[in-house]
Length: 83
Image (cartoon, rainbow, N blue to C red; front, side, top):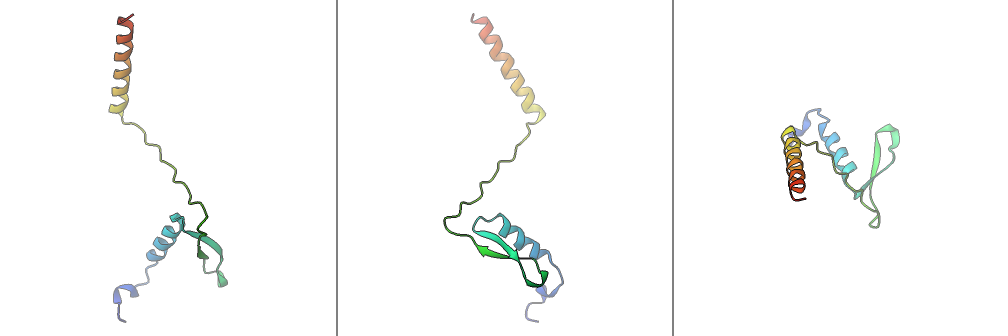
């Protein structure tokens, strides 16, 4: 009644909280909650190692590929002419 914005039956905020807890190394997912209402979350031990983020591979663009080929060809030509 004090905050009508939060009265809507929108569960997106729960997904947001769950997502942020799962990617934050300071929290760990615990056992199943009573009455099947999801899982319990706990603060991770201080000595627990945070998960390392894996770098996403980025594919080069077509122009970058062509630029690399051109550079490679130019360096090969230079080495052939200097011999």
